[in-house]
Amino acid sequence: MAKKGNRVQVILECTEHKNSGMPGMSRYITTKNRKNTTERIELKKYNSILKKVTVHKEIK
Image (cartoon, rainbow, N blue to C red; front, side):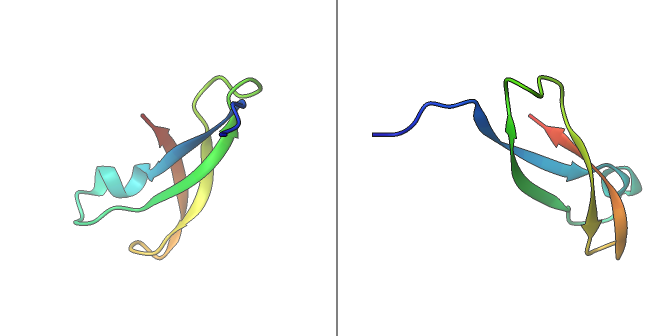
């Protein structure tokens, strides 16, 4: 039986790469606590295509 909790999986997508128009995409999958963090999260993650750390925002 599966647990029903407050943790949900979210996808983070690079904002700089999306705006640059370059082919490909940088995405990460992580989890967040829905009860404690109701707004969308932003994390700094490494983008392997741009070869630098960029801001990744949660997408729907």
